[in-house]
Length: 413
Image (cartoon, rainbow, N blue to C red; front, side, top):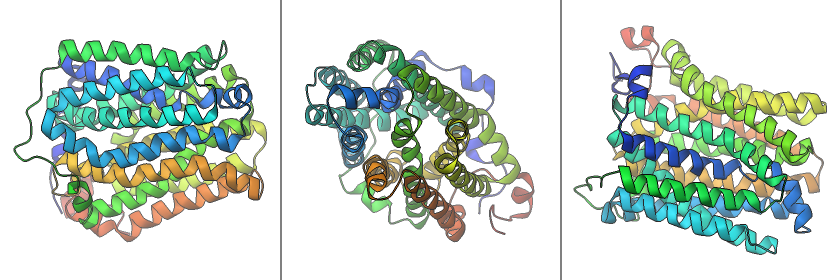
Protein backbone atom coordinates (compact mmCIF):
# COMPACT_ATOMS: atom_id res chain seq x y z
CA UNK A 1 0.00 0.00 0.00
CA UNK A 2 1.42 3.35 -0.95
CA UNK A 3 2.04 5.61 1.96
CA UNK A 4 2.70 9.31 2.36
CA UNK A 5 1.34 11.95 -0.01
CA UNK A 6 -0.68 10.60 -2.84
CA UNK A 7 0.39 11.66 -6.35
CA UNK A 8 -3.23 12.38 -7.18
CA UNK A 9 -3.35 14.89 -4.35
CA UNK A 10 -0.56 17.12 -5.66
CA UNK A 11 -1.77 20.45 -6.93
CA UNK A 12 -5.38 19.77 -6.18
CA UNK A 13 -6.03 23.19 -4.67
CA UNK A 14 -8.63 25.58 -5.99
CA UNK A 15 -5.96 27.90 -7.40
CA UNK A 16 -4.35 25.24 -9.56
CA UNK A 17 -7.79 24.02 -10.63
CA UNK A 18 -8.67 27.42 -12.10
CA UNK A 19 -5.28 28.27 -13.64
CA UNK A 20 -5.48 26.18 -16.80
CA UNK A 21 -4.38 26.61 -20.43
CA UNK A 22 -6.97 27.68 -23.00
CA UNK A 23 -6.86 24.20 -24.53
CA UNK A 24 -8.00 22.68 -21.24
CA UNK A 25 -10.87 25.15 -20.89
CA UNK A 26 -11.93 24.55 -24.49
CA UNK A 27 -11.97 20.78 -23.91
CA UNK A 28 -13.73 21.14 -20.56
CA UNK A 29 -16.33 23.49 -22.07
CA UNK A 30 -17.10 21.01 -24.84
CA UNK A 31 -17.28 18.29 -22.17
CA UNK A 32 -19.98 20.26 -20.37
CA UNK A 33 -22.09 20.20 -23.53
CA UNK A 34 -21.33 16.50 -24.08
CA UNK A 35 -22.60 15.67 -20.59
CA UNK A 36 -25.60 17.95 -21.13
CA UNK A 37 -26.62 15.53 -23.86
CA UNK A 38 -27.05 12.74 -21.30
CA UNK A 39 -29.72 14.45 -19.21
CA UNK A 40 -31.10 16.63 -21.98
CA UNK A 41 -34.04 14.35 -22.70
CA UNK A 42 -34.95 13.86 -19.02
CA UNK A 43 -37.62 16.57 -18.64
CA UNK A 44 -39.05 15.97 -22.12
CA UNK A 45 -39.39 12.17 -21.99
CA UNK A 46 -43.17 12.41 -21.36
CA UNK A 47 -43.42 15.04 -24.13
CA UNK A 48 -41.52 12.83 -26.57
CA UNK A 49 -43.74 9.88 -25.65
CA UNK A 50 -46.83 12.01 -26.33
CA UNK A 51 -45.44 13.58 -29.51
CA UNK A 52 -44.42 10.24 -31.04
CA UNK A 53 -47.30 8.22 -29.55
CA UNK A 54 -44.90 5.95 -27.65
CA UNK A 55 -44.87 4.12 -24.31
CA UNK A 56 -42.42 4.95 -21.47
CA UNK A 57 -40.43 1.76 -22.14
CA UNK A 58 -40.11 2.69 -25.82
CA UNK A 59 -38.96 6.22 -25.04
CA UNK A 60 -36.48 4.92 -22.45
CA UNK A 61 -34.68 3.20 -25.32
CA UNK A 62 -33.25 6.66 -26.06
CA UNK A 63 -30.92 6.01 -23.13
CA UNK A 64 -30.43 2.32 -23.88
CA UNK A 65 -29.29 2.75 -27.49
CA UNK A 66 -27.10 5.71 -26.50
CA UNK A 67 -25.25 3.90 -23.72
CA UNK A 68 -25.11 0.50 -25.40
CA UNK A 69 -23.20 2.01 -28.32
CA UNK A 70 -21.15 4.08 -25.87
CA UNK A 71 -20.11 0.92 -24.00
CA UNK A 72 -19.04 -0.98 -27.12
CA UNK A 73 -17.32 2.11 -28.53
CA UNK A 74 -15.06 2.22 -25.46
CA UNK A 75 -13.08 -0.61 -27.06
CA UNK A 76 -12.57 1.56 -30.12
CA UNK A 77 -11.69 4.94 -28.64
CA UNK A 78 -8.12 4.07 -27.61
CA UNK A 79 -7.54 2.24 -30.88
CA UNK A 80 -8.59 5.34 -32.82
CA UNK A 81 -6.91 8.02 -30.67
CA UNK A 82 -3.56 6.18 -30.57
CA UNK A 83 -3.53 6.24 -34.38
CA UNK A 84 -4.94 9.63 -35.35
CA UNK A 85 -4.19 11.56 -32.15
CA UNK A 86 -6.30 13.03 -29.37
CA UNK A 87 -7.33 16.24 -31.14
CA UNK A 88 -8.59 14.51 -34.27
CA UNK A 89 -10.46 11.96 -32.15
CA UNK A 90 -12.16 14.74 -30.18
CA UNK A 91 -13.14 16.52 -33.39
CA UNK A 92 -14.45 13.30 -34.95
CA UNK A 93 -16.58 12.66 -31.87
CA UNK A 94 -17.91 16.22 -31.85
CA UNK A 95 -18.73 16.05 -35.56
CA UNK A 96 -20.73 12.85 -35.06
CA UNK A 97 -22.66 14.38 -32.15
CA UNK A 98 -23.49 17.49 -34.21
CA UNK A 99 -24.79 15.38 -37.10
CA UNK A 100 -26.78 12.84 -35.08
CA UNK A 101 -28.18 15.34 -32.57
CA UNK A 102 -29.49 17.41 -35.46
CA UNK A 103 -30.92 14.31 -37.13
CA UNK A 104 -32.60 13.31 -33.83
CA UNK A 105 -34.51 16.57 -33.96
CA UNK A 106 -35.96 15.59 -37.35
CA UNK A 107 -37.23 12.17 -36.20
CA UNK A 108 -40.78 11.15 -37.04
CA UNK A 109 -40.82 7.90 -35.05
CA UNK A 110 -39.34 6.42 -31.91
CA UNK A 111 -37.32 4.01 -34.04
CA UNK A 112 -35.63 6.84 -35.91
CA UNK A 113 -34.94 8.74 -32.70
CA UNK A 114 -33.47 5.68 -31.00
CA UNK A 115 -31.23 5.03 -34.01
CA UNK A 116 -29.97 8.61 -34.14
CA UNK A 117 -29.28 8.51 -30.39
CA UNK A 118 -27.11 5.45 -31.03
CA UNK A 119 -24.99 7.44 -33.51
CA UNK A 120 -24.90 10.25 -30.96
CA UNK A 121 -23.59 7.75 -28.40
CA UNK A 122 -20.73 6.75 -30.70
CA UNK A 123 -19.68 10.36 -31.10
CA UNK A 124 -19.98 11.00 -27.38
CA UNK A 125 -17.86 7.94 -26.56
CA UNK A 126 -15.07 9.11 -28.86
CA UNK A 127 -15.21 12.57 -27.33
CA UNK A 128 -15.74 11.91 -23.62
CA UNK A 129 -13.15 9.14 -23.17
CA UNK A 130 -10.53 11.12 -25.08
CA UNK A 131 -11.42 14.39 -23.32
CA UNK A 132 -10.48 12.95 -19.92
CA UNK A 133 -7.08 11.83 -21.24
CA UNK A 134 -6.51 15.21 -22.92
CA UNK A 135 -7.45 17.16 -19.79
CA UNK A 136 -5.22 14.96 -17.60
CA UNK A 137 -2.35 15.41 -20.05
CA UNK A 138 -2.69 19.15 -20.55
CA UNK A 139 -3.98 20.41 -17.20
CA UNK A 140 -1.83 22.38 -14.79
CA UNK A 141 -1.79 21.18 -11.19
CA UNK A 142 -1.48 17.43 -11.61
CA UNK A 143 -3.94 14.59 -12.03
CA UNK A 144 -6.13 15.57 -9.06
CA UNK A 145 -6.82 19.02 -10.51
CA UNK A 146 -7.53 17.47 -13.92
CA UNK A 147 -9.97 14.92 -12.49
CA UNK A 148 -11.78 17.57 -10.45
CA UNK A 149 -12.01 19.78 -13.53
CA UNK A 150 -13.45 16.86 -15.51
CA UNK A 151 -15.92 16.07 -12.73
CA UNK A 152 -16.85 19.77 -12.62
CA UNK A 153 -17.66 19.61 -16.32
CA UNK A 154 -19.69 16.45 -15.72
CA UNK A 155 -21.65 18.02 -12.87
CA UNK A 156 -22.29 21.28 -14.71
CA UNK A 157 -23.36 19.40 -17.82
CA UNK A 158 -25.67 17.08 -15.89
CA UNK A 159 -27.20 20.13 -14.18
CA UNK A 160 -27.65 22.26 -17.30
CA UNK A 161 -28.80 19.46 -19.60
CA UNK A 162 -32.25 19.05 -18.02
CA UNK A 163 -32.60 22.84 -17.76
CA UNK A 164 -31.83 23.30 -21.47
CA UNK A 165 -34.14 20.41 -22.27
CA UNK A 166 -36.93 22.02 -20.24
CA UNK A 167 -36.55 25.52 -21.70
CA UNK A 168 -36.32 24.42 -25.32
CA UNK A 169 -38.55 21.36 -24.93
CA UNK A 170 -41.39 23.42 -23.51
CA UNK A 171 -41.61 25.10 -26.92
CA UNK A 172 -41.22 21.88 -28.90
CA UNK A 173 -39.64 18.56 -27.99
CA UNK A 174 -37.41 18.69 -31.07
CA UNK A 175 -35.65 21.94 -30.12
CA UNK A 176 -33.30 20.54 -27.43
CA UNK A 177 -31.70 18.28 -30.02
CA UNK A 178 -31.07 21.18 -32.39
CA UNK A 179 -29.74 23.24 -29.48
CA UNK A 180 -27.24 20.54 -28.54
CA UNK A 181 -26.06 20.27 -32.13
CA UNK A 182 -25.43 24.03 -32.21
CA UNK A 183 -23.53 24.03 -28.89
CA UNK A 184 -21.37 21.08 -29.94
CA UNK A 185 -20.57 22.88 -33.19
CA UNK A 186 -19.27 25.78 -31.06
CA UNK A 187 -17.19 23.26 -29.08
CA UNK A 188 -15.80 21.92 -32.36
CA UNK A 189 -14.65 25.42 -33.33
CA UNK A 190 -13.13 26.10 -29.88
CA UNK A 191 -11.11 22.86 -29.85
CA UNK A 192 -9.97 23.46 -33.43
CA UNK A 193 -8.73 26.91 -32.42
CA UNK A 194 -7.16 26.29 -29.00
CA UNK A 195 -6.09 22.65 -28.69
CA UNK A 196 -2.75 21.62 -30.13
CA UNK A 197 -2.31 18.08 -31.32
CA UNK A 198 -1.50 15.82 -28.36
CA UNK A 199 1.54 13.51 -28.39
CA UNK A 200 0.60 10.03 -29.50
CA UNK A 201 1.48 7.10 -27.26
CA UNK A 202 4.67 5.22 -28.06
CA UNK A 203 2.61 2.04 -28.48
CA UNK A 204 -0.63 1.88 -30.45
CA UNK A 205 -3.61 0.59 -28.50
CA UNK A 206 -5.24 -2.58 -29.77
CA UNK A 207 -8.97 -3.30 -29.59
CA UNK A 208 -8.35 -5.94 -26.93
CA UNK A 209 -6.12 -3.86 -24.63
CA UNK A 210 -9.06 -2.54 -22.51
CA UNK A 211 -10.32 -6.12 -22.06
CA UNK A 212 -6.83 -7.30 -21.09
CA UNK A 213 -6.58 -4.44 -18.60
CA UNK A 214 -9.61 -5.85 -16.80
CA UNK A 215 -7.47 -8.87 -15.92
CA UNK A 216 -6.11 -6.72 -13.09
CA UNK A 217 -8.11 -7.58 -9.97
CA UNK A 218 -8.37 -4.02 -8.72
CA UNK A 219 -9.61 -2.57 -12.00
CA UNK A 220 -12.03 -5.48 -12.51
CA UNK A 221 -13.39 -4.93 -8.99
CA UNK A 222 -13.83 -1.19 -9.55
CA UNK A 223 -15.61 -1.86 -12.86
CA UNK A 224 -17.88 -4.54 -11.37
CA UNK A 225 -18.88 -2.29 -8.48
CA UNK A 226 -19.43 0.64 -10.85
CA UNK A 227 -21.65 -1.57 -13.01
CA UNK A 228 -24.15 -2.03 -10.17
CA UNK A 229 -23.82 1.61 -9.13
CA UNK A 230 -24.54 2.79 -12.66
CA UNK A 231 -27.70 0.70 -12.74
CA UNK A 232 -28.91 2.61 -9.68
CA UNK A 233 -27.72 5.95 -11.08
CA UNK A 234 -29.52 5.60 -14.40
CA UNK A 235 -32.68 4.29 -12.82
CA UNK A 236 -32.87 7.72 -11.18
CA UNK A 237 -31.97 9.57 -14.37
CA UNK A 238 -34.14 7.70 -16.88
CA UNK A 239 -37.12 6.40 -14.89
CA UNK A 240 -37.80 9.08 -12.29
CA UNK A 241 -39.24 11.65 -14.78
CA UNK A 242 -42.17 9.31 -15.40
CA UNK A 243 -42.69 8.86 -11.66
CA UNK A 244 -42.59 12.59 -10.91
CA UNK A 245 -44.93 13.26 -13.86
CA UNK A 246 -44.23 16.99 -13.89
CA UNK A 247 -44.18 19.65 -16.60
CA UNK A 248 -40.88 20.04 -18.52
CA UNK A 249 -40.08 23.22 -16.57
CA UNK A 250 -40.70 21.67 -13.16
CA UNK A 251 -38.92 18.43 -14.03
CA UNK A 252 -36.01 20.41 -15.50
CA UNK A 253 -35.84 22.47 -12.30
CA UNK A 254 -35.71 19.35 -10.12
CA UNK A 255 -32.91 17.83 -12.17
CA UNK A 256 -31.07 21.15 -12.34
CA UNK A 257 -30.88 21.27 -8.54
CA UNK A 258 -29.97 17.57 -8.61
CA UNK A 259 -27.11 18.34 -11.00
CA UNK A 260 -25.88 21.29 -8.93
CA UNK A 261 -25.75 19.04 -5.88
CA UNK A 262 -23.93 16.41 -7.95
CA UNK A 263 -21.31 18.97 -9.00
CA UNK A 264 -20.82 20.41 -5.50
CA UNK A 265 -20.38 17.02 -3.86
CA UNK A 266 -18.19 15.75 -6.67
CA UNK A 267 -15.77 18.67 -6.70
CA UNK A 268 -15.90 20.20 -3.20
CA UNK A 269 -17.17 17.60 -0.76
CA UNK A 270 -15.70 14.33 -2.08
CA UNK A 271 -12.01 15.33 -1.74
CA UNK A 272 -12.53 16.47 1.86
CA UNK A 273 -14.38 13.31 2.86
CA UNK A 274 -11.74 11.18 1.14
CA UNK A 275 -8.97 12.87 3.07
CA UNK A 276 -10.77 12.31 6.35
CA UNK A 277 -12.19 8.81 5.90
CA UNK A 278 -10.48 7.28 2.87
CA UNK A 279 -11.88 6.65 -0.59
CA UNK A 280 -13.31 3.20 -0.01
CA UNK A 281 -15.18 4.12 3.17
CA UNK A 282 -16.64 7.16 1.41
CA UNK A 283 -17.64 5.04 -1.58
CA UNK A 284 -19.14 2.19 0.45
CA UNK A 285 -21.05 4.54 2.75
CA UNK A 286 -22.33 6.66 -0.13
CA UNK A 287 -23.61 3.60 -2.01
CA UNK A 288 -25.55 2.40 1.05
CA UNK A 289 -27.04 5.88 1.54
CA UNK A 290 -27.98 5.97 -2.14
CA UNK A 291 -29.81 2.65 -1.66
CA UNK A 292 -31.78 4.10 1.26
CA UNK A 293 -32.56 7.21 -0.78
CA UNK A 294 -33.90 5.05 -3.63
CA UNK A 295 -36.27 3.25 -1.27
CA UNK A 296 -37.56 6.63 -0.07
CA UNK A 297 -37.96 7.75 -3.69
CA UNK A 298 -39.94 4.64 -4.58
CA UNK A 299 -42.23 4.47 -1.56
CA UNK A 300 -42.55 8.09 -0.41
CA UNK A 301 -45.13 10.71 -1.30
CA UNK A 302 -44.68 12.91 -4.36
CA UNK A 303 -42.93 15.55 -2.24
CA UNK A 304 -40.65 12.89 -0.75
CA UNK A 305 -39.88 11.58 -4.24
CA UNK A 306 -38.85 15.05 -5.39
CA UNK A 307 -36.64 15.54 -2.31
CA UNK A 308 -35.10 12.06 -2.71
CA UNK A 309 -34.39 12.69 -6.39
CA UNK A 310 -32.54 15.90 -5.54
CA UNK A 311 -30.69 14.27 -2.62
CA UNK A 312 -29.48 11.43 -4.83
CA UNK A 313 -27.33 13.98 -6.65
CA UNK A 314 -25.11 14.27 -3.56
CA UNK A 315 -24.42 10.53 -3.38
CA UNK A 316 -23.95 10.27 -7.14
CA UNK A 317 -21.45 13.15 -7.04
CA UNK A 318 -19.40 11.45 -4.32
CA UNK A 319 -19.44 8.13 -6.15
CA UNK A 320 -18.47 9.59 -9.52
CA UNK A 321 -15.31 11.20 -8.18
CA UNK A 322 -14.12 8.17 -6.20
CA UNK A 323 -14.83 5.71 -9.02
CA UNK A 324 -12.96 7.87 -11.54
CA UNK A 325 -9.90 8.08 -9.31
CA UNK A 326 -9.96 4.35 -8.62
CA UNK A 327 -10.28 3.50 -12.31
CA UNK A 328 -7.32 5.71 -13.21
CA UNK A 329 -5.09 4.72 -10.32
CA UNK A 330 -5.79 1.15 -9.27
CA UNK A 331 -3.95 -0.69 -12.07
CA UNK A 332 -0.65 -0.35 -13.90
CA UNK A 333 -2.36 -0.06 -17.29
CA UNK A 334 -2.05 3.26 -19.15
CA UNK A 335 -4.81 5.56 -17.98
CA UNK A 336 -6.67 5.75 -21.31
CA UNK A 337 -6.65 1.94 -21.55
CA UNK A 338 -7.75 1.46 -17.93
CA UNK A 339 -10.49 4.07 -18.38
CA UNK A 340 -11.73 2.37 -21.55
CA UNK A 341 -11.92 -1.05 -19.89
CA UNK A 342 -13.67 0.36 -16.83
CA UNK A 343 -16.17 2.34 -18.92
CA UNK A 344 -16.81 -0.63 -21.21
CA UNK A 345 -18.19 -2.54 -18.22
CA UNK A 346 -20.08 0.20 -16.41
CA UNK A 347 -21.88 1.71 -19.40
CA UNK A 348 -23.66 -1.58 -20.03
CA UNK A 349 -25.56 -0.96 -16.80
CA UNK A 350 -26.41 2.56 -18.00
CA UNK A 351 -27.92 0.91 -21.08
CA UNK A 352 -29.76 -1.74 -19.06
CA UNK A 353 -31.41 0.41 -16.37
CA UNK A 354 -33.52 2.65 -18.67
CA UNK A 355 -34.85 -0.45 -20.42
CA UNK A 356 -35.51 -2.66 -17.43
CA UNK A 357 -36.92 -0.07 -15.01
CA UNK A 358 -40.15 0.60 -16.98
CA UNK A 359 -40.38 -3.10 -17.88
CA UNK A 360 -40.16 -4.05 -14.20
CA UNK A 361 -42.94 -1.54 -13.48
CA UNK A 362 -45.09 -3.17 -16.18
CA UNK A 363 -44.46 -6.60 -14.63
CA UNK A 364 -45.05 -5.46 -11.02
CA UNK A 365 -45.69 -1.91 -9.81
CA UNK A 366 -44.04 1.48 -9.69
CA UNK A 367 -42.15 0.76 -6.44
CA UNK A 368 -40.21 -2.33 -7.51
CA UNK A 369 -37.82 -0.66 -10.02
CA UNK A 370 -36.44 1.43 -7.15
CA UNK A 371 -36.07 -1.64 -4.93
CA UNK A 372 -34.06 -3.33 -7.68
CA UNK A 373 -31.92 -0.19 -8.06
CA UNK A 374 -31.37 -0.06 -4.28
CA UNK A 375 -30.27 -3.71 -4.27
CA UNK A 376 -27.85 -2.90 -7.11
CA UNK A 377 -26.32 -0.06 -5.06
CA UNK A 378 -25.88 -2.36 -2.06
CA UNK A 379 -24.24 -4.98 -4.31
CA UNK A 380 -21.83 -2.28 -5.49
CA UNK A 381 -20.97 -1.48 -1.87
CA UNK A 382 -20.58 -5.20 -1.14
CA UNK A 383 -18.00 -5.55 -3.93
CA UNK A 384 -16.08 -2.57 -2.57
CA UNK A 385 -15.96 -4.19 0.88
CA UNK A 386 -15.20 -7.73 -0.33
CA UNK A 387 -12.49 -6.58 -2.76
CA UNK A 388 -11.02 -3.82 -0.59
CA UNK A 389 -7.57 -5.43 -0.61
CA UNK A 390 -7.44 -5.51 -4.43
CA UNK A 391 -8.74 -1.95 -4.59
CA UNK A 392 -6.01 -0.62 -2.31
CA UNK A 393 -2.94 -2.77 -3.04
CA UNK A 394 -1.97 -0.80 -6.17
CA UNK A 395 -4.30 2.16 -5.87
CA UNK A 396 -3.31 5.79 -5.64
CA UNK A 397 -6.64 6.52 -3.98
CA UNK A 398 -6.93 9.04 -1.17
CA UNK A 399 -6.35 7.70 2.33
CA UNK A 400 -7.21 9.35 5.62
CA UNK A 401 -4.22 10.92 7.31
CA UNK A 402 -4.03 8.29 10.06
CA UNK A 403 -4.07 5.48 7.49
CA UNK A 404 -1.24 7.09 5.55
CA UNK A 405 0.78 7.19 8.75
CA UNK A 406 0.19 3.70 10.10
CA UNK A 407 -0.45 1.81 6.86
CA UNK A 408 -4.03 0.83 7.69
CA UNK A 409 -6.04 0.53 4.47
CA UNK A 410 -9.32 2.36 4.09
CA UNK A 411 -12.55 0.44 4.60
CA UNK A 412 -10.58 -2.35 6.27
CA UNK A 413 -12.85 -2.69 9.28
